[in-house]
Length: 229
Image 1 (cartoon, rainbow, N blue to C red):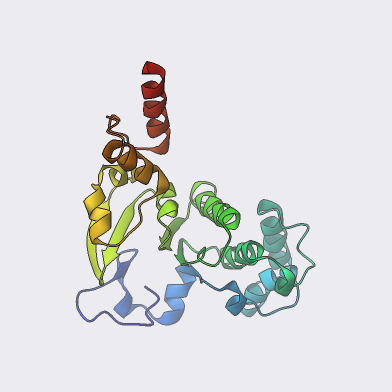
Image 2: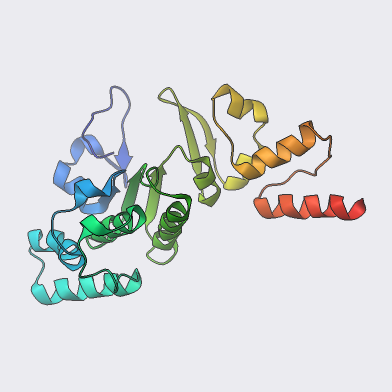
């Protein structure tokens, strides 16, 4: 998608335009990328300067640049961090700053490349929550490349790859709960915990749990079984 590698066959379109006909600068005018290691994205010695750096290179007028930076700091609750160096922040805080730096350019599409893989479980939750905020509050399209199966539960649409090929395209997270246990085993994938729990109760304890399409439904169904007994 970033055009760093050209497709060997077929075409890739972004907003109905084949990337072969779009130059590198054009792609990054509407595509924002958040990488696995945020340290590779930092240039300056303070958060406030970091958010302004790219805007300066784009020759954004100072008054507008200051307004954009201030709005980002307020919207993402970065007030306590704005004068600190990115080097002293936690992994989750660094990733949050990296996202804010990309958001400053106001791209229509965000690409997260394993952006939560180096984070603690709590920090992962914070970044996934921020992804949802980009979709709901900022009306952005978010594509997240991940091996974290728990993250899939927050997705609106899921594409599963194996050996460079699409093996499943799920139009909603509900379809994830309908996949058989054998699907995950064949791909050497560990399903989300809620799916593991449902399968284990059925296979190991012969509990006939009604089909469920969310964690909430699973909890309700288990509660009903407990109350019956």
